[in-house]
Image 1 (cartoon, rainbow, N blue to C red):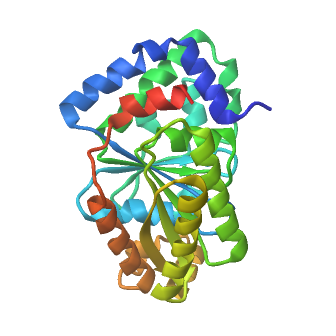
Image 2 (cartoon, rainbow, N blue to C red):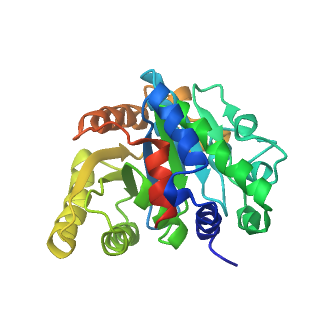
Length: 299
């Protein structure tokens, strides 16, 4: 089976998007009117480190600051952002591809102040769309231009599809834990990004999840940052840590976001700190959906 993001990229190329037609024009017009969307991709070297939980609650924490936030579930094989939010969506990206729904119609207005777009396990079937269906799907991407922040929850690991999202994003957040295997895999995805993505302006940031202390988080981050700098010549910004918190585990079982139901817990306070750091670390205005699609297509 062809890589899902690769399939999307190929049919976009078939629509001559490199030359600025179709969705690029639509997105560009929208962004001139509404400002530039900042695209943040969240990734991890391995599964089980809490990446999706971080993504969802990061989106909610941004919304608390008054930002218009959309979270896109790009873990197209095991999409589960909706599980973290306790939502059972009727429609997802597959319905847009089949022209059964528009992108606007599958955007789920959550009770948490953010919008969600569910992924589709059948995403690879996009290769079978006819020309009209493809054009409709491409044009639908303008819906993201209304957001201040677009958070993309990618699949774990370093597949070509994941790299395409990471290469196109304004910021990439790598989530790891203090476990040795998670640290090794976090370095692994940073290494692949550094060697495979043809960009000199990669903004890679690190979050250490489930730490027992601030010092533990700093120790893990220092290890990754030093190795990446020494062997890859790649700069990594340490955003901070998220404490191991029983409140998070309880909320996951209840399918409730901890930043809403346990706003004063240690993990929620950590995320507030991380968002404020995201807004202040060498912050540049997001380059928008138009720029994101151009990079996505060409990687």
